[in-house]
Amino acid sequence: MNTSTSGQIIVKGISGSPGICIGKAYLVDKEGVNLIKRYPINDAQISNEIDRFKQAVSKAKNDYARIIESIDKAIEDNIDILETHMVLFEDKMLYERTIDTISIDKINAEWALRKVAGKAKSMFQQIDDPYLKARVNDIDQVMDKIMANLIGAQDKKISDINKRVILVAHDISPADASQIQLERIKGFVTDRGGKDSHTSIIAKSLKIPSVLGLGKATVNVKNDDILIVDGSAGILIINPDEDTLFDYVERLTRFEIYRAGLERESHLPAITKDGVVLNLMANIELVEEIVAAKDYGATDIGLFRTEFLYLDLRRFPTEDELFCKYKELVELMLPHSVTIRTLDINGDKVNSYLSVVEEANPSLGLRAVRFCLENEAVFITQLKAILRAAAIGNIKLLIPMISCVEEILQVKQIIQKAVQDLEHEKKVFNKDIPLGIMIEVPSASIMADYLAEHVDFFSIGTNDLIQYSLAIDRRNPQVAHLYQALNPAVLRMIKMTCDAAKKKGIDIVMCGEMAGDPINIPVLIGMGLTDLSMNSASIPVVKNMIRNIDSRKAKSHMKKIMVLNTAKEITDYIINEYKDILPFVGEDEIL
Ligand code: PEP
Ligand code: MG
Image (cartoon, rainbow, N blue to C red; front, side):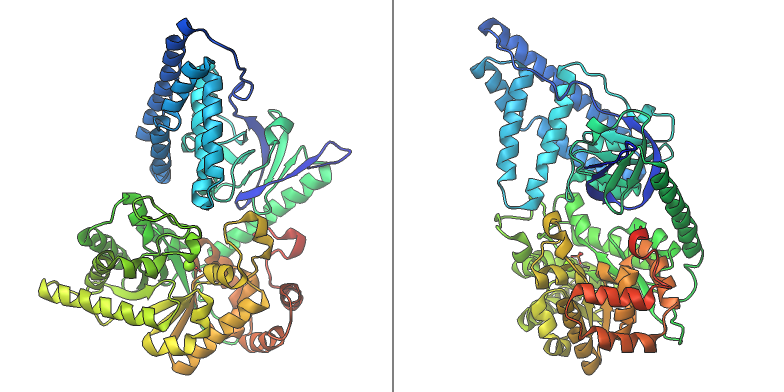
């Protein structure tokens, strides 16, 4: 925390969702929840205390049920999170142990709940799996809700807020977030919350700036204080001085004008100054995202992540369920192509019904194609649905996390089995579709020339390629500064992959987040990449960058970049060469 003589306080937190907002603070915490006391009870009071606890839980559940029923369509995904909390309310670990603790320790319900929740949290904290670790947050939110009922705290209802404000809270639970009305709430900041917490998932889905994990933000902020939330930098500024405020107002205005201008131009072709045409595609997870992808100017869907249907359903979907989804998707995109990636489950996208064995290192475990090869029936079901949809639309089939030649040979055999099944069942399908593999493991990049013999295209997944080649967990904020797309080792891997594809005459796409950051575009064009897939919102800014680049110059810059030793040297080189066209370089960078 940094306090200046003017009273301005700057607090560094974690970026929950990007963007900047400036406005008045509105504190939404439940007073008293953090100030509970321990007091002993006698035998005669035990049953009364247990009843009080049960009523508090039951009220919390009723509140949740009402919220789930009235939830806004736009944030329907939150229902899953709320349902997780509903289960936690009656989970043995919390519910029964609190009741036992009241009667065994003879203490008040508030203290018993805090004690039990504390133990449950420390148990989760010791688990290596970051997904389970993040569940500590859920326990906190459930405990707060019950505690608020126990002490009779008055909830300030977020849905009742009738002015444009920035929410300041110790925590924002999924239930709170579901009440956020986007026309009223400019952004939010919280003490709690980490990169993988549910709050950060919600912040992104709401697309309003937010900073999480601030430690003590609510202590320093009073209602109506002026706040600046810099969600991109993960910074909260409380009562900014005049210069800072002026600076941020300017940045915000410039950013909004710039962004609006880019979006107006998003339908122009992605063509370099010397006439090289690039194909900008969208990465999507849900069919509903197609509208936004088209609005932002995506030509095709370069990556459809299929795991979310499996996670939402909490069971393996049937062939027909998958077929219907894929059919809807490809029909909406016709005549353009959709690259459907087969199940990339486990790793960071876990679900309890899928992970049979607990893994110490899920990212290095039975993930993606490894899971599919072990669970052939699940794989065949998905492949059959994809091949059937390929008779209707323009599909490319993409296999994630291939790390050796044997795996792709095995995949091909299983595709053959899916084809035989479909023939036997006399279903309409199309097996003549391009088959590609993600290049996201260093071994695949090193073996790219051999792998190219067996497939029609490569898709470079930089999100994982960076994590695996630099040994940096992509979700760990402690090592986030070392996660560098422009690290020379990463660039070498990408270059090797591009060269192998070119030599063997197969297509190559990049579909990791690296493709969505303008600073990387000169190098990617320099390496000859013309097909880039990214989150839709990045397309306008990347397109603008491409339209200002000369590919011949980018090629000669790339050669110079490839002999530089460090990510810093490479970044400085690009900034220096492209400062006139890079959006908001240096201190002003807010994209
Ligand atoms: C990647 O690894 O770059 C990628 C696009 O896949 P995901 O982010 O789904 O792992
Ligand atoms: Mg990946």
